[in-house]
Length: 303
Image (cartoon, rainbow, N blue to C red):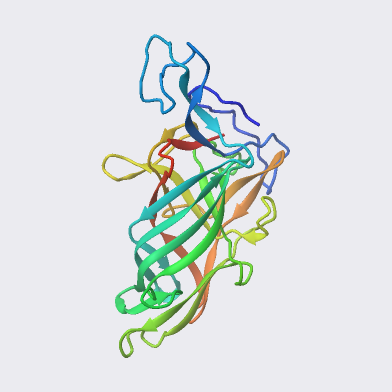
């Protein structure tokens, strides 16, 4: 288990990586970090209270703000919401959702993982708002509910992992659907021919690398950048060791491949989604969500 450590930027030397899927090098992270108020003992801290709100420059307090690496078995609950999300489907058959909310837990370990329950709200066939998309019963039949599991990964630079940036790799976490199906939803006509003859079921399926460690035993579907929203609500990437109150993930402009820590090596994984059913072919998810911890603590990632 990693120990608490003082705030600072932790940058490690890049790891040698061959042109094939894995390398014989020391693999590390990314891991989740959380800023906590920790009791360091009398006259060892800059804060006088357990919430670290009463600052004492004379170092006469007991409490200190320190970054803690979440170890295996440690969790922090989070909540998230976003604006418009679009599933770009084949033949211009795109599904648009006007907003998104989700809840879940970031989970400690090397690499870090998380579990999330996501609801895409007010969904419809793009350009045809009367053609509703959803997998819940009325009056929420324009809501698409999805369960996912994710693992932190690094961008691939072909020669080594880029440990200055991190991505979250998304996998299905369904209990009743096919093993690699994220969700099955229905296009429902709110008026005659609103769905242009496409009324029926659509499946969103992960079609990337099958990952057994972490023990997902699922295929990777989506990669999302880890970052934050600046003062102008514009997405920016976060770097290793940076802690934020309001984090963000972005699935726009992401690569299709990444490097997953696997013991002492890195594995090159591919993350792809496709749709089947009413229309079939490759698909792509586009959207941005902001994320914060329920505890109100700052958090981030590091190598």
